[in-house]
Image 1 (cartoon, helix red, strand yellow):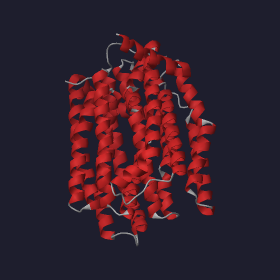
Image 2 (cartoon, rainbow, N blue to C red):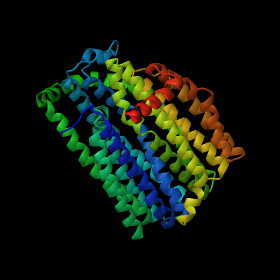
Image 3 (cartoon, rainbow, N blue to C red):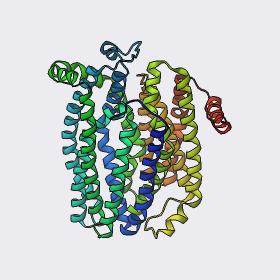
Image 4 (cartoon, helix red, strand yellow):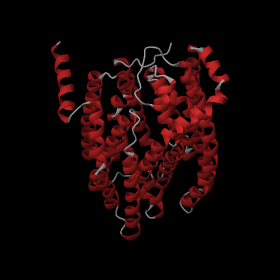
Amino acid sequence: MITIFNVGKKDIGLSYIAYFLRFFSSIIILPFLLSSLTKSEYAIWNIFLAINTFVVLFDMGYGVVISRYAMYAYSGVKESELETLKDIKGSDEPNYYYLYQIMIAAKKIYSRISTIVIFVLIIMTMYILHIANNNLSTSQVVISWLIFSLSVYFNMFILSEATIIKGLGMIKELQVITITNTLFSIISKIVLLKLGYNLIGLSIAYLITSILLTIQYFKITNKIRKIKFADYNKALKTFDDQFKRTFKIITSKSKGIGGVLISNFIQNQLFLLIAPLYLSLEVVGSYGLSWQLVSVIGAFSSVPFNTYLMKMGNLIVKDDKKKLKEVFSISTFIFVSFFVLGAFILTLFGADVLKLFNSNTKILPFIPLTVMILQGYIVQSIQKSTNIISLTNEQSYVKALVISSIVTISLQMIIFNTYPNLTYLLLCNVLIQVSYNLWRWSKASMDICGVTYKTIIQVPITKLITYICK
């Protein structure tokens, strides 16, 4: 039994259980990482993760568009409306035939992307060797990297299934997978670190988790195919004729999102790849650790919003303005409240907690950490706003995000080559985003959902009071 667009309190509960596990996995594993890995090894591991983020850019926005079109198809939007996306209207009967067309196209698209990724990872091996030179054992780094690369390939390949599951709002299924895989990841990483495998152990755990994830995703999408198997067979038979048209539709909408993904990478992850060329691995490690903790706060705060994102898309299609306003207001209020609380805890107690773990790597000092927290909040806020705008098939934000990312990295390169101060490097990103993107796209998303700042505060408080008084 699978549940599609049936998001309720239990799904939110599962989402938080899943996130708490991911969160506590970071907390549980972090002491083992910081005590088992040297500063250089920890920096290299963060560079591995940054490269993984870079490889995800080859998705070029296909994942977001495929998820959205899967949502449209299941919402009963007609194929002709899906092509033009003008005056789209949903119905109670899902368009299974077009949903299956999208599923088949997704598999073909990601098979091609995964092939490209293999060659990119081979080229990145030279970069890894250059960074590791004179700092770590070459054989250890190469073996770790090759194993890690294989897991990156699996993660890209399985996106063909993950995007469909996400687009159909199958929260229960997604979170059950997350919970089981997180538990396995925690146990395997701790065991392998304790056995002294360090970087190699982390890479092995990462690979096994990716393989398990692949198997679990395919089980769910196979169930989706069986709902209307006759339509699926029809989609298979007509696929060769339909693929060019479907691919053209998806590609035309993914270009802008691809630009946004590149923009986000330049602003938030490229720094981690450039920094080792100018700063010590010790500083890079501190940056990576601090950004990881800020990202944890952002992800935890975003659980309700991300859980309901595809549901909000469904509400936009159904033109249910009252419910949309309620869902958006409550999830945004929770995001802001939890982020502020998490930032406060990290700033006051983060360094002391790490001392208890006998960490070889420290978080950043107060001033650069505070600027990084601001950057983290801005990144999450802009991302949420553009996600809402994307649900209406508008991409007006693309040009501004791309330009701002180019300006940011240009200024950072000047700072790197003149006065490489970490606070200045972080601050230039914050100031550029605040000057336009933050306020501009926040306002646009609020207009779509029919809310104001007053609404975002008023609706959740009213709901809470009503719930308490029952």
